[in-house]
Figure 1 (cartoon, rainbow, N blue to C red):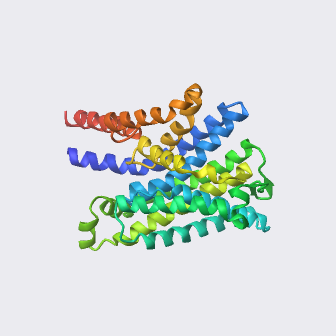
Figure 2: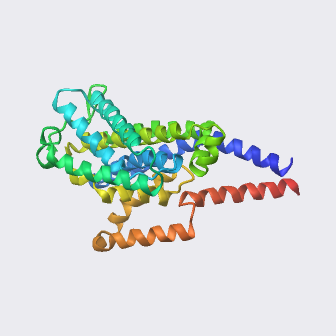
Figure 3: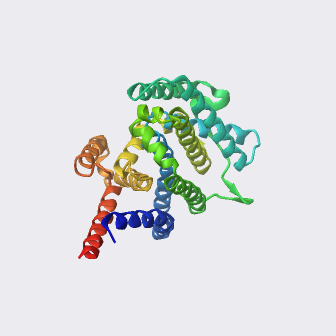
Length: 332
């Protein structure tokens, strides 16, 4: 068997192994949830899952679509306020969440149309402006967002008639949603769509000349990723029963960027690792809150210099090394 043939076989096995990886990842998440014994630890696990959902949406926008959007936290806030608005008007939990996703998707489409011709740095600035304007509006529109942007008493999640009141119960909802989104990500990874998205991200001009629908794919990833951000905002709002405008500021936007970069742009699995770091590090270094920004900056710099493919790149390097060893053994 030639080396090329072996590499193609290994690639095929790796693609089919995505479903196995999904099963292993969900088992690990379940193991982590069962290992924690305190209420605060369960709360952190749930926060990890919610941030993973939001970061996965940002991954689709940034790593797949090739567009850096500061608007993900705005979409999370919009999803949260929308679900709270529907909840106050007697809509059920499922209707609230679906309504939040639809409203967020429509808002993302509108933003995408306005910034249609903006590229790279200018698109990032445009979405940053949208977020800053949104923060001001959320604090002023009391009929939709409550007094000073604060709403309390939002209903608990309800699934199959069961009200999820505890963090342990909410965990199963968040884990199920994350599993479905990861399954969708695996399907995208295995489909020909990945090839087109890679071309759009790396060579948009060349892709247009080859007939690839660059604008449509960029809009699709932006709208889909933003809708997932709205979903995350709706879930965290029902889980905590409260929403405030300060919960979705610029710091969280930068945090989502860190999650994706630290985890690695090469794979959607990296967002789970990046989100875990983002949630765990402040807890592990609780006495160094004043230095947290410096710590994240140093950590990001180290990852960029030492692990340019992110933390998930370490795993990929080990897999590639294993394939090379197998290749040498077959050739000999």
